[in-house]
Image (tube, rainbow, N blue to C red; front, side, top):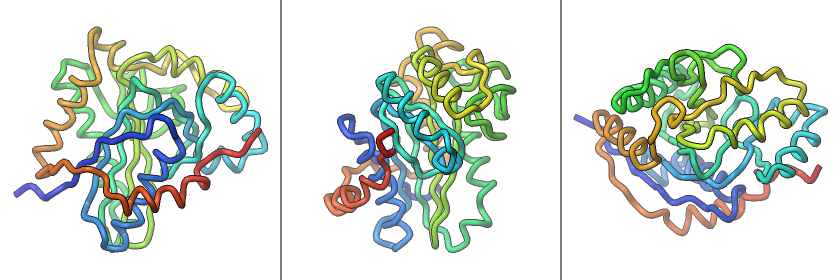
Length: 252
């Protein structure tokens, strides 16, 4: 029988750092037993999300400046990996689940979500697969691609005591905007990146829309979960406001 899963779709378009902090607040509250297993699928604001390795780099300040000069806020995300791009033509995923041994379930979580996205895209007619595309941004073995040529989605994780978070981004439209900001950001970080590998669902399936892709993803999720859509509660939002500043990249 499918297990219950709470779904939130609200994004904070005018405050990217708060948007990230909401996912962290949910993770904290799931770990504390205050919330059930919870998923956010949102249409996020424009931001470059930097990982821990980026933040530790001596070139981080230059990368932050490059992101902001190209119209993207710079934030520090929950999940691991290198810099990735979110914008209004993407779907952001944040899945927090209680787990007394989160370290033991890293690979099953990766496999579940890469498989869900692959199946949803195949449902729409995309030649989707899972695996790293040579030269891709934020490289990872669980990237979702089209035809082995262009990366469409990436996922990462954060583990805390008694819970695990899986976060990701699926680029549906406007891959040119992704490339436009990642080129200067990756140059600033001195990271290899082939812009031709950064794509969108729309590139592989002309006419693809956020609505169609989100619907396909939810159909695949419904095979595994009993989805209950709900509004964000005020306690979670208040906790997110307390955490917000921790996710803002410093001024360059």
